[in-house]
Amino acid sequence: MIAAVYGIKNCDTMKKAFAWFDGHGIPYEFHDYKKLGVSRAKLTAWCRIAGWETVLNRKGPSFRKLPDADKADLTQAKAVALMLSNFSMIKRPIVEVDGTLEIGFAPDRYAVRFGGAK
Image (cartoon, rainbow, N blue to C red; front, side, top):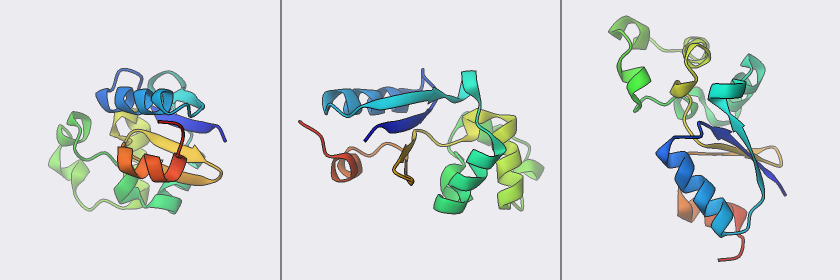
């Protein structure tokens, strides 16, 4: 199992996730949104699997700074367009393993899902 970890390298939450994977001996490949982007197809698939409400990072400054009109009446299509226009609006990390997703960093959830040596 090699986890595909998507996010932004300098994000504090990403640093915690990297440390967790490294500390538990879990191999991963990192995909940096800022350098490599994310395709519409990939983002839409994540939204289909987890729900766009889970994938959209509403707590970050990029989303909070949007005009109220952009934040109103959100649909999956509108959320995907916002995330494609600014990758910082995608929650992180998003971890793909064997066709499943883990979204956000939660050590307890990671321990159950990924195991690894402690």
